[in-house]
Image (cartoon, rainbow, N blue to C red; front, side):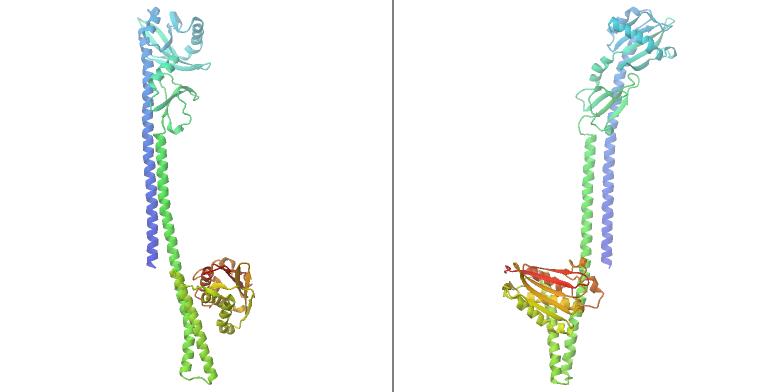
Length: 509
């Protein structure tokens, strides 16, 4: 008992260890992938921040250069200042302390008509939103806004020169920003993809990577310039994050497969142990049953032999009766021993059959004759019907006789209450059919497919004082299959049972 318990404990320990190893292996792989993913995302986030700072630095430096060169007393030089500075400025407006445009304080790259439209737009809609009087001197402010679907970026500063306060408002050239500056910062050969989108997510600049999962995209807003736009960064190739996801999936599949193999191995081992244990139990029961089967005829032979040896007989007729009992019990004993020996040969895979031309009718008659005493003792009548057109077959007469004897023995032991056994041998098509019918309690449907297994005995007879080895019907099936035939049973509870043994007419060995 200790060995099975130890095996089960070891199996449980192996399963727990394998599960733990799989769990921690997957956890480590997942944690490693998460760390690598976080590292890639952090790198892209730092890169996005660096790009934004570079772009805004260029714009702010351009604005500050213009702010520092424009003075209230040199308004006429605005165009020269803009030509000398970088082309990131679209328009310049200089306002006096009263927030009116000073003479000569308006310049725009637009033509005259569009310039007047812009001037009106600036005075009516933009200046009220700048809160110029509230800003501190020399501090740059900005406004990124939309009007009629068009974006505008304004920078403004309060200046004081020679005791006079004035205000400078610059309009950034966003076309120059998108068409010239963005390509300089977001190189086309970069291993990453860049997008600049507005608040609605509409593309302003860059490549469309809508198919890229949002979890693999870093998004960061501009702060001091186009603050209503956002920069998005993603990996250009399927490497990086996608490769991490793929590797994590591969790790999961490999770990899961390994765990499945281990679990399958443990299940197979458990099934094998269960079968071995069941086989050992069946063999123990078989040994016990066979021992009892052997003991009964031996006891009878020993008792009647002792009576004959001591001369305790009243007449010669009684002595003859005792001798006949001894002979028939010895025949029964020999048949049981033959069953066991033949079964042992079959288990070893040894060749136990010798085929020759024979008559199935003679086999049946011989089996009935050998069982006559048991039939009489059980008060059972046997009806034998043999067809006249049976062809000779290539059979092992002794083995086939043993099969019929086992079928008769089975009927006598388990169906003796029926008091009748019918044996029918008929020629049906290209086969010979031998049927043994009893009128006993029958066999449950769920057990009919198992009664031909070795050592198996029906549950309904295990609780009854009926001894059996559990190999008789297994031998019948093996003998039938050795003759290229088969055996089956038809039965309903309470209606008896009919065993059918088929042998093909063309059967030759």
